[in-house]
Length: 535
Image (cartoon, rainbow, N blue to C red; front, side):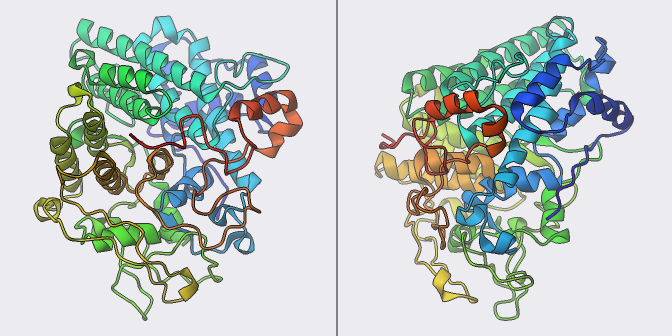
């Protein structure tokens, strides 16, 4: 593991943005101190398009960050909790996040990057007057803000949001419900700003020089914003069905600009010198491998995307097979498990592979669930389901026609050739082909399972959907070192707040714990994570 961080900036942005970040990114000693510092620092951002534009490559690259931050922010939590991956590195003597012995120093890093590298920079853009002088740029900033901070709140729950950077005596936390409501309002502003600009300036791309996602195409940013709204709406469907439906229908209204429908719409970070952080984590550090849950589905389904997603094992005992590692395994010191399958460094995690924030395939599966729930604007559930599979297959350049009609293949049992303690029978019996006579619960399991495969390797959203729906059915941790705070069968629900917040923002963090309606540990459910049936 490495813990360095380097902002990746393209062309002429690097030195100008580095100078900006030297003024705005502060030593992280607790959120309160950072927010106070931000209120008193003079960032010196000019009000012109060029000066404001220079800030955006750093904000975009920080959604995932480089390898050091990405490993701590997502890879050693959500990517593994989602069943996609597991580490062959016995970090901290096999007492770490991956067996529920949560490492405070690791998880604090999420706060560091979310606030200092993104939230504060976006606040600085607002202070520079972009809300009124550059409403189109401000629209992009709001979309990136929602994308970034949703990742934070869906890990921890309550978070400093509405008052972040505005107070000197402690930073209040907002409830997750309040944060989601603010997300929807910010997406309203973003879509309105961009639609207004496009209508008045057809074909103009003033953001092109600063755009690591869509090359300045505002129509695609609008689609991403609407699709993000649809995703967030589905997150809250079990806790607030009325708001979920209202927001989903707004997202699906073609008058608002549409949603992602084809792979050319996919929202991904790339270019400008940015490289896929999973490449180094996989090849240079050998710190991550395929998860056993990914193996059980991808191998069991004879999934044609498997060679794109992973490389065959190199261990001579099972060379050529696809073999993952079960989460929570007591892995031995390197190179003990290094011969198991890893993410394919030539395809899905090559240095130039884009980091996907959202794909069209995911949106088709969101529409499939919306249709299953009777929201007529979403269309037909079966059509959306099969289109989602086809869209994912096309994304990876494979033929999925046989796969879509496979009504017999099942997930396989897991066998660990190194330690039989880790073995497990398959925990899911769901097949691939759509079954119109199935129950809604069975149909939802199909939809979420296929969405989970299509989103690989984006573990943040996959973990969220597992917590929300219970699907796909994942292997539990082999060793649970949470001291009873996390139920092995229910699995981990969140990360605990950083301990630094208790020493630097004590009064407010205590209020935040009250908003959780449970203890500050990994077993407490988030606001939208409601313990009740899906239907």
